[in-house]
Length: 320
Image 1 (tube, rainbow, N blue to C red):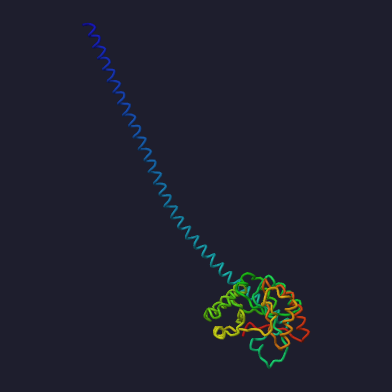
Image 2: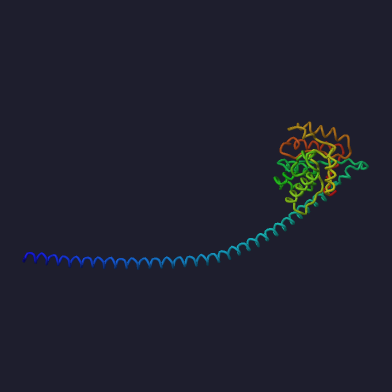
């Protein structure tokens, strides 16, 4: 009986201990839950505050950036307008300087300047040679200009629009030295004849005129044109060109440098001699291109021959 009572006593004590452990466990769980919940709520509040600050900052930054973009745009437009005006002024000054230098050179030389109609006037019996060069400027242009300057002679250069863009400084030098500038179309497409309308040909001439003015300035003017391959048998194209305000000129003497590549120097000279004997006023066709080295080599001899035959030298007027 006594043993049984001790057993029951031990069981009762163990039961009490177990209850106390459960209570401690429950309190610990509740305490931990409260701590976790408090921590979670605190973190969430911090995140919300940061998001609110970030959103406010983005809105403020966007407003400032939008204002900055507009200000930058206005500044850029202002600078662009200034650059355009400066370029236009520089272009005008450049054109005036080039034209003034060209006039000074022509006047100092007292050279002969004749319109197309004056050149073909048969009543004028003077012996005058007009040296003309098609297709330039080219890498050989400086050598041609050096030779002309040595003899104090001016020439007429029929410029391609594509070449003017490739060698703008050579074109400027041609003008500054007092030479005359004509239009040889932009593309030199002989296929225009018969395959395209006369208006398409005139458009190509206008495109070349624009390319020349890009180099020499918008005030530079020339209405002188030479057809690629000549205007022979192209009456409708010639009429369309004249209606557009241009005047074309062909030739009555040629050195023959377009007949094939690398025509020997002596052959070029003899071709000029043979044709020059037939006329008083001669318009000589030559070419200023990268494949015409012998043309440059023959030029001094051609000039010497013409001088020996009593020819004066002139240029074709840019205004006809």
